Image (spheres, rainbow, N blue to C red):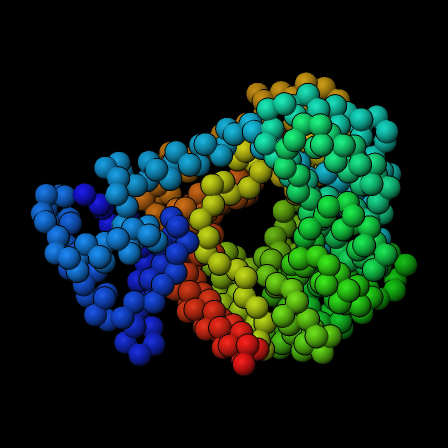
Length: 449
């Protein structure tokens, strides 16, 4: 007999209805008050009978619907163990390889909070060959290879990207694995010509950062020559969004307030981008000693989750797509996967984006055999959320799986500080997401008339 999921969340919504959400499946549904009452009665019946009672036809029908979204599950095992199994399956999977490659750590910007400092140089032929050799040696057992181009500013080393990609695509044909590529770029060099080239290089999605409206962004993310960057980036995004999936990151601290966010949204609307990209708000953090100077302006996770709600309401109000969903994950990030690394231009291997370019935090080099017992590997990899009573008992565990490993290892955060935003803002965010979906349905219906 089925069990009711421990990861269910219900909240009153409009017209007496209820929003239903399951953190293990990510399913979101609207339930009538009548169906919600029937659900409650069914949950009591299943719990009291321990699977021994007979269900009516209407109860059986409801149970089937609940099982479809995993609000109930037909398994005799404890549900947390099912989540744990999927987590460990992903952690130790060697059929999928994820590499974040920084062909250069140099950048054309001088962002006031950047942790990467002033780096120079780009990847040598030796390091490029070592990366290809590493993948080639694993290729017979790989079903997919996922590359994320990173930096610095990766487009300063576009020739390196072209060379590595050409060799990987040739290898893909021989070894028959799936290949995907994404990029994180500041967007200034993302001209139409470069976009077309990236499409040819099988890059499908790009993350670009705008730190507020033009007047703020140009101060915080000025070019090294002192010139402004906002309008050039916006112009580039207009074309790029017709060829690639564009995710726009807006870094949030206490300086960037609600009026500034609204000003940015109006600038994006004026450029016709409200339906052509997804926006998410990134919490600025003093991740290293290099960017410790911004610590006083950074929000705590709890405070950030509160302002984030207001900013997503602005997105909804101005007709922007809302793509941030409370979706279940198998691992939080690459640090929890045995077969994923960040590689900088000198070939050093890291377990976190924030460590790139700092050899003291590396776990070795791509030119040598990988040491999985290196302290810089184990210090992030060893944490298991299922060993934490707080995490194991959490009703949103599948959404974060213990949160950021580097915060846990580097920042001396308490268990409460380590909790991700969903723990603090799930209910209001579900309401915003439901409204966004209704808004999109109405827009689609009008377009079809």
